[in-house]
Length: 308
Image (cartoon, rainbow, N blue to C red; front, side, top):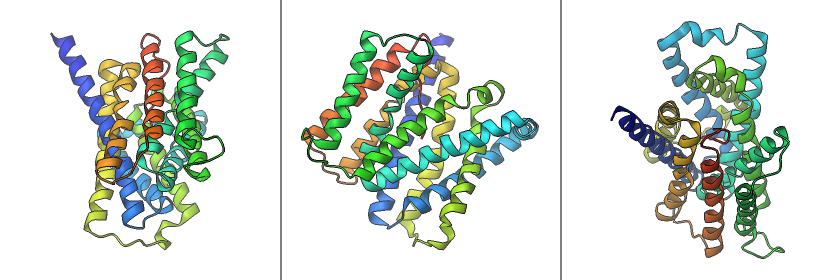
């Protein structure tokens, strides 16, 4: 009975993590479309504020361990690479994709990372993809083609910038998942994410100087920002990794597939995005890719992506 309750709790935590990530993307789209905010302002502000809050929580819980990550040169190098090439590039390219398309499209495109991770696994294991894996790759390729062209190879229906940054998000998400392997052996994921957000947010702040952009933040914009900070960042990561503890990374990634569904539904019903049949077909094919690869990785636990 206890095992069943633990599994049920893990599923619920993971589902809410995915729901909150989907909400975060939709809130970002709302800010871009209706409040004139840009990714150059939103992403560094989000990373610095959310990362600082998470870091304070981590310091209160265990200050010694939280600070010990800076004691060895190897850990510092790993953390900086992860923060810039993983967390920062992933977050920035994800929101730029939303800014140039919509939350549903951006969230679906990021999951192409699963195919890239699969290719990496096949190379490191010196093997060819299995039948199910090949089917997943084909689904992903066709899905991206349909989303980008609506079936007409001579015509792009989303901007080249959106497609470029969508694919960049997928590549960064691979780094996000694979690079911090040694850090995760030593430290709590929550603490690593907190440090990486602070480092990444500081880096982007130096690049874009968000204090010079000064967008007008009214009540609705403030609510959307708070939703991104607390629901889409702090609670989503906390819930997701609690789910990972209870049911494992591969199972958690499977249930977190609700994220692109939530982002797409919010884009349609809240933000009034008009998707075409080709878009839905592309979304379904990429979601099928996620399900096939996640289900196939349950035993080995090798394919489990998350970025938020």
